[in-house]
Image 1 (cartoon, protein in one colour):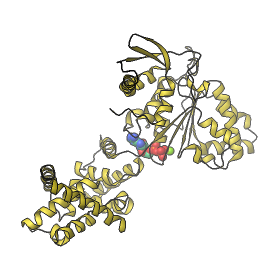
Image 2 (image 1 turned 180 degrees about the vertical axis):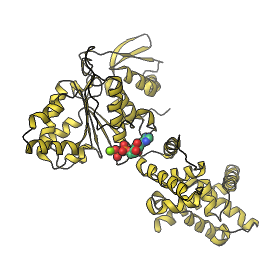
Image 3 (image 1 turned 120 degrees about the vertical axis):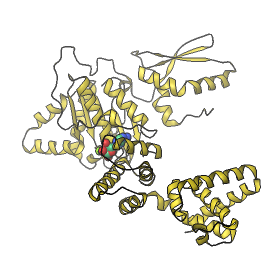
Image 4 (image 1 turned 135 degrees about the horizontal axis):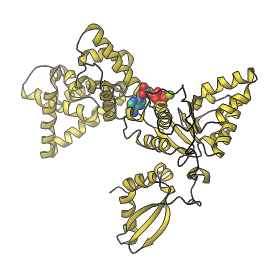
Length: 445
Ligand code: ADP
Ligand code: MG
């Protein structure tokens, strides 16, 4: 079992655990909330037990118990941010419904957010905040590159709270809107009204705080809004397009406020998640796009979800306008100009074919061609195997590059070469050599 735990994991999760009690081979650990108990127990229980076993030579069972003590366990996280007394943003039972914030787009919901390894942590924390605003994760900072779902998540928090706890006043703004409103308020001598709007929020959601760089007086105002709400145990959530320490010209005291609670990042989705997102976006739409083409989009567009959506929309529009079924070739052509991403950075099939042809002393033309003689078939299969192993191309794309062969031919070749590698050390060594050559061929280019 892998018992290593990254520093990031340790800071976010493990430092929130403390010793509670122990008894014959059982260790009870205190955690501050149900959410943390469930997460830590599913992710780390086995690892902790294994480490304890290694340290003590005994088998020790670990259990977690939720303890909302006034005296939180020692942690790097400042005291208040760990878990406020639940009086936080919880509304009074007879409180009135608050008007919904018109800046929150109701189409951003947790339900429509496709969760992958890249976003599970940010999603879970956002959901926990939406269910218990002001209680466990306060303030929260969500950061990540453009188009990765920051606005979707922060607005999902807003929508969820407005739907489930309508007594809470939710306020959503982008940092840009906040800045403009502030400037306008100064111009019209309405700063008291401006302050009142923000100070009456129970949940304040501020998107894209990187916009505050170099805006000294807006930063100052934001600092006061922050302190005011934070001291009143109101929930604060921010998003930023980069880690806070990479921001330029933001006052340290404000940076320090933004990061004092929980910090979660959104990474670009992996292939499986990209495909799941594409499938979800096709649901309920008249979209005649085959799963092969979806697979192609998922493999080629690997920058962010916004580009993924845009590619799909473009192909659907193309298909509807021309009343044509989208083929891989059309998709390739249409997306080439817009999103020609990782493939040029990654290994090209062409360089693999050259290296293999060279090794077997045949021409690249033969490898792509129709000849079925033994001296050509094996090199061709090996080249397909290498392409499949060291690149991100799908079997369909590889088939296309190998003279328009079917993806089943590629699959068959890969299986055959795998069988040979397993049964013959010499073949295995040659293929390893070829892979290294193909990789250095690419570097020299
Ligand atoms: P950001 O604010 O980080 O730039 P957005 O939240 O605006 O990104 O996301 C861009 C688009 O991608 C939006 O239409 C959003 O709904 C969609 N999107 C992003 N992440 C996901 C996801 N995990 N599942 C479904 N849609 C997503
Ligand atoms: Mg955004």
